[in-house]
Length: 165
Image 1 (cartoon, rainbow, N blue to C red):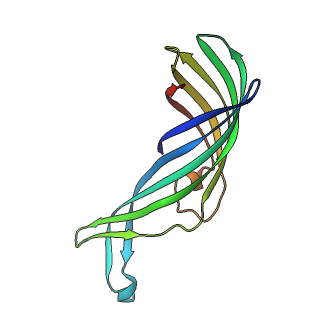
Image 2: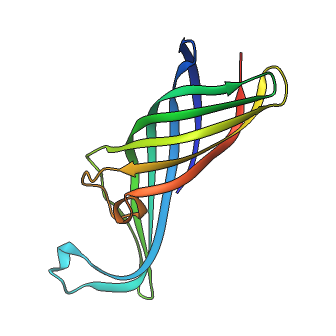
Image 3: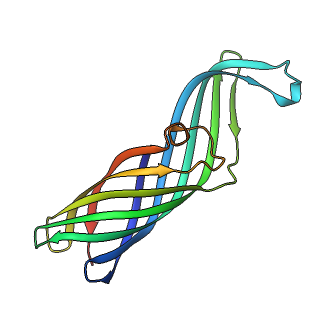
């Protein structure tokens, strides 16, 4: 999966803050398969390469605990979760006889929880470079088959620039 996002950090009290925002994620996979046209009662079958693309919009909510901070560096712990909605779920079948695109709506949201740590290096007064290694657990909730349904616990890292106003 590849994700991009924009977020807002809200100081709560002392060393606690809350992060929220909006994330966009795309998950892709490919495999060999056979497509059977439902209207043909199984007589019209196409074999070929299947590409599966899922696009999600998510709203994360994280609680940050500032462990150490000075003018150049900030070290923190993160715990939180995210709710994501699949806004597009498309299967493309590339066969010798035809090419088919099939949209399959996903009705249930995807829930996950997250735990990790982060380090931010201050580049200027209002700009920092950060990395947040974390573990995320994805709950089973009638989602299409993906890395998130096959391996519910994923280890990853968010990397980016942080702007302070």
